[in-house]
Image (cartoon, rainbow over all chains, first blue to last red; front, side, top):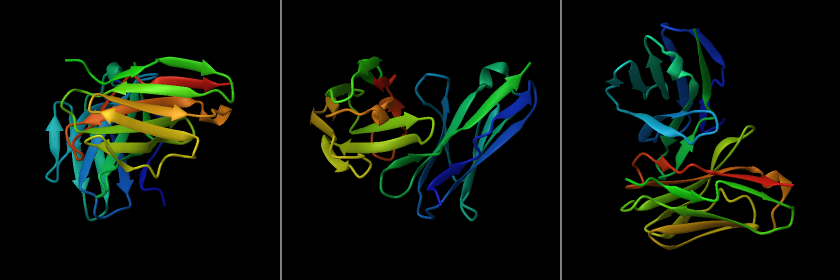
Amino acid sequence: RKEVEQDPGPFNVPEGATVAFNCTYSNSASQSFFWYRQDCRKEPKLLMSVYSSGNEDGRFTAQLNRASQYISLLIRDSKLSDSATYLCAVIQGNEKLTFGTGTRLTIIP
Amino acid sequence: DAGVIQSPRHEVTEMGQEVTLRCKPISGHNSLFWYRQTMMRGLELLIYFNNNVPIDDSGMPEDRFSAKMPNASFSTLKIQPSEPRDSAVYFCASSLHSNSPLHFGNGTRLTVT
């Protein structure tokens, strides 16, 4: 089993819709969780950290489920500019930030 | 503020040649990471440093790969000799502490023919 797994997609979603991604991790001792966004031929950029109680930043909501070992990202009222690859990242207790392979999202006008 | 600076942006070389990738982390960041990204394998951690000291190089694929961090503001990743399967985008990233979010450089797109 991979340390961090994501559905690669692609997710093709109409503008204005709500879309959610999940990311599972294998190590129950994992302690820090993040969502990154990567545009085509660019570097990954931090979108948001994921806190135990869940957190929201505008249209974006991140949640952590420790019992089932997954994190989620919800995007409401999706915009064309949200089209990108979304990478989850987990620090698994050994200071190494391990990334999922990413979920590709395309917002359709 | 200057972000993580990598050079070169693009590198095209022939198989067997030595390749050196360079990275300047964000000033004040204590941790530096080298990642490789390919379509097939995604982002793979090659090696990371804390306070200039290599902590984990288990991701370095072979002895052909080596990395150094002689001071807090500079790191290199060297491939010698290079092979076509090394073709990828190599990212350097730094963070304030080992558990902090990473800030990535623009990457070096390496093509080995």
